[in-house]
View 1 (spheres, rainbow, N blue to C red):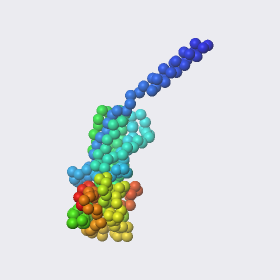
View 2: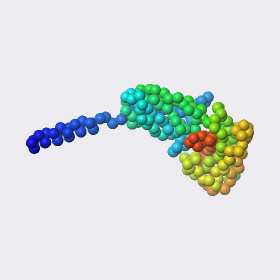
View 3: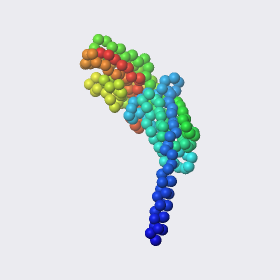
View 4: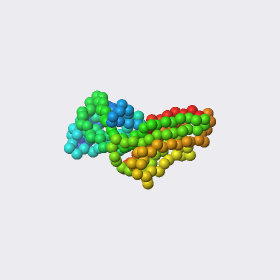
Length: 227
């Protein structure tokens, strides 16, 4: 009886070892979000920029979604995927809905998406004047969406400046909730900002947002200013 139990235990152990002997996920998905009508990447911030949604359709008609975060420069990369067929879709960013792309991921697969941002910027001018900063810009959009609710000049000594990282005392915000979008889109916004520390480096970008579900901002690229 003891021998039988010993053999049974060894069989269970061998079976467990076989189950755990699967290859680690080592296939890669990369890509870029491009702004429609331009050669520019969709720029955002980290964290909380946008996510890439994956549905593995190889084995199920109703798969559980997987998500990973995209990068602030508009690129995304995931190096720990199983070889399979997936539906790939950017979601939860400051852009209009994007159709999913179904593709096989084996080795390295690159997929680029074209997105329409909720808001964009034009006539942007960020100019140093002595120990002050003059900022002017206009908002524009390719497609009407949710109400435009605010715009802000984000400034920080941290190069990751954005809605997550900024110095509130030198980052003026304009509340636009009670102004029509038509009037907003015809307005040139001007800010003169002072109270900077001398001999310091600051990072500046402009953001504006609509009343979208995630309250995500659209942003300009970051500008480095030496005071």
